[in-house]
Image (cartoon, rainbow, N blue to C red):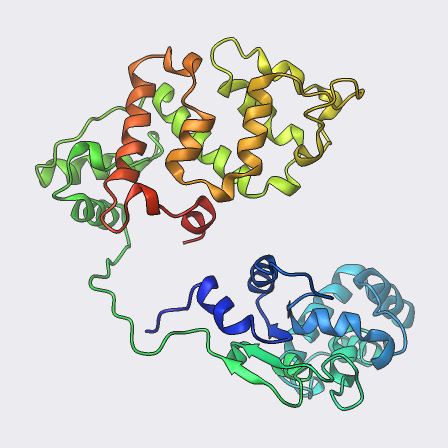
Length: 376
C-alpha cells in the first residue's frame, strides 16, 4: 500500500510547468485554484477538456451531444427505442476507453448496429482518437507534465504530448496501517467502535447514530461489555444541533451552487427560538444562488438580505474554506440567543471545542482549514 501525495505537494511539483494533464477533474480544479499570478489559460487540464478545445481541428466541428447522437442512431435504426440505444451507447463508450477494437466485444446484433452508426458520428471519442500532437498547436512550445499516467485509459493516452514529464501521484516507500478493523454485522461494527474509543474520556468521543436503528443497541451493549462509561442521550434536541452543524458545513463547501431554498429551514433554526432573521429569505428568492444575493443594497427588489444574522451566516459560508471547525462553530452557532437554549447547546460547543483543542497532531494555531479537514 502506498500513500498519495497531498494537493500542496503535487502543486509544488507541477507549478513549474506550462501545462499539466490529469484524468482527475477535481485535481485539475484544485491545481488551477492555486494559481496566484496572471496567466493565459489554465495550468491543469483533463484529456477530455483538451479534446473539447481542439474539436474543430480533429473532427472539424463540435462533438455531438448525447441526445443528438441517440437521435441520429434511432434515425438509422428506427426499430430501436431510446433506452436501448442509450444502454448500448454507454457500453460502447466503456469498451472504447480500453481498446479501439470495439466490435470484437459486442455480442448482440443490436449492439453491432448501434456501433456501426456511432463510429461514423462526430463524437468526443472520435475527436480524442483523431488527435495528433504533431499536427496540433495545443502543446507546442510548452513544458508539459502528466500526473498519474497509470490512470490514463486508451483514449486518454491519445491526448498526450510527444514530450512530457511524469509526476507520480504517490510518495516513495510503503504505507502501513497499524490496525485494520473488519466490519461485517452490527456486533463487529460495535466492537470496532468500542475498541477505537477505549481509553478516551466520555467528553473526548461521541458516537452519532440513528436512535431507531439496530446498531444503537449493539453499540450500547459493546460499551457495557468493555466497561466504557457513556452518556446515553438520544434526544432529538441534542442531535438536531449536530445535524444542523454538519449540514451547514456541507452546504458551505458548495457555496457557489447552493440556492436559497437549500438553506431556508437551516437559517431559520440558526436564528434561535424566534426565527425572526429567516423572514428575509422570502419564497421569491428560492431559486436565487445564495452567493449572488445582495447583502449591502436593501433597495434591490427581491434580493434584499438586510438582517445582520442572515448576512453573518452567508458570509461565514462564503469564507468557510479558510476557517477551522472551531472558528466556523463560533461564527455560525455560538450566539447569545442559541446560548440561552441551555446546557445541551453548551455541551455541544464544549465537545467540538475539546475535539479541536486536544488533537494530538496539531495545536489551535495550526488547525487545518475546513476545506482540508473535510476532504480528508
